[in-house]
Image (cartoon, rainbow, N blue to C red; front, side, top):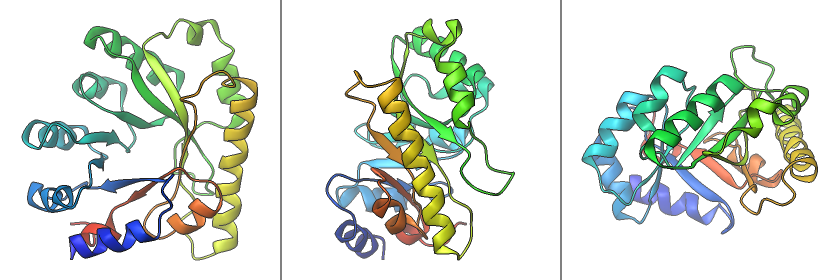
Length: 220
C-alpha cells in the first residue's frame, strides 16, 4: 500500500509544503518502493541507521535527521545530511559548525522549539534562542545555515490544543524572521505536523510535514 498511501497523502498536501517520508526502522525495500513513486526526501531519527541507509540507497535522496541529535554523533552525518531538524542548544550548533567546516560544507539546520506540554520533548523557548542569536559565539558560526524552525505538538486527541501549539510555533517563526533573519531568503521553513496532525499543521502555516506511519504502516 506504500504507493497508494503516498499518492493519497500528496493529494492532501499543497504544492508549497514538502513531504518528509519518515523511514525510521523501515527496511531499504520499503524506501525503494517510495523512491520509485518519485519520493526523494526521507527522515531518520537514529544516526547509525541514517548512515547505513545513505551508504546503500540512491545518492539523489535528501536525508533529513529528525530525531534528537547528540553532539558526539554529528561527525557521522555531517558529510551528507541535507537538513538537521532538531537543533536545540548552542553546544549542538557549535559542533555542527565544527563538523561542517571539516567536511567543507555549510549545513542547513532548523531550530527546535518546545511547544508541547510533555516534558520529554526537547527544544528552545523564544528567550533562549534570542540569547543564542545575540551571542558572540553564534556570530562565529560560519558553517551552519538556519533555514527555519521545528516543533512537535502534544500527543493528544484535543485538536484545539494541537492547533494552539502549532500557532505558537508559527508566531515564533514570524518573530525570528522579522528580528533576526529578514535578509535571509533561505529562512522560510516551519517543520511541524506528523501522520496524526499534519493537516492541522498545514492549516497553521507548516511548510514541511514529517509523515511515517501513514505511508509505511505502524513502526516496527
